[in-house]
Length: 274
Ligand SMILES: Nc1ncnc2c1ncn2[C@@H]1O[C@H](COP(=O)(O)OP(=O)(O)OP(=O)(O)O)[C@@H](O)[C@H]1O
Image (cartoon, rainbow, N blue to C red):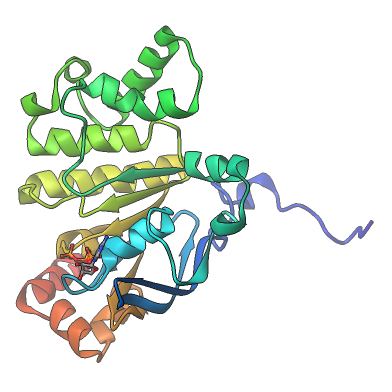
């Protein structure tokens, strides 16, 4: 055995695993519908513990990529590895294991309207776990509290909730199985600026406390400036630019330049620096 290889002392180890570990790796991904190519030879890495903001013009294919990573769209070419598993060549057992480590908040929350908040949060638990009802109730209540909802929200139906509460309930459902990574599709759309800022703060807190990795499709410049560690820009059917906000601000790529150096972005940049 190599005696020179020693484990780092506990205080030097990252609390939630290696932040340089690539947990999702998309390579050469091509996706199209009826002869129209939406993504072509696209590459993307998502690192453990980061909040990655994913932006791009409307219709560029952000949702298509999200659905492709989740295995909901067919690829024409390429591979997607999640936690090192190539989902196209994985056994059903491995696919289930990977699915259980990913939580999703679809655009508009997408809660089941006939189910209460508690029952919505329990949907993934019923699908993947075999737990007694009392334990499921307890676990679902913990998730409801974790996202900042009051306990009495548990028995409400989606139609009785505000937009912000719906997003939180949907996030509680995405967290139902204690995933390693959550995918958020425009989580702050439809929220007022204060509600949106509160939601961003919650996402950052969950990342810090649980070591969550967050993949956030967004048009919200506030979110990009306040919580995202890195930004990836989709355009011309691929990830055309990726990097920190600083790098976005320095980019000369025309769409990135107009998006990140518009009036609102300049104002946010000044606020972030002051
Ligand atoms: N199942 C499908 N069948 C055919 N075309 C599709 C399908 N899903 C997406 N598309 C097309 O793919 C393109 C990209 O759509 P997508 O929803 O990914 O864009 P987006 O970047 O998420 O846009 P937005 O920011 O407006 O939400 C669009 O032209 C859309 O019509």
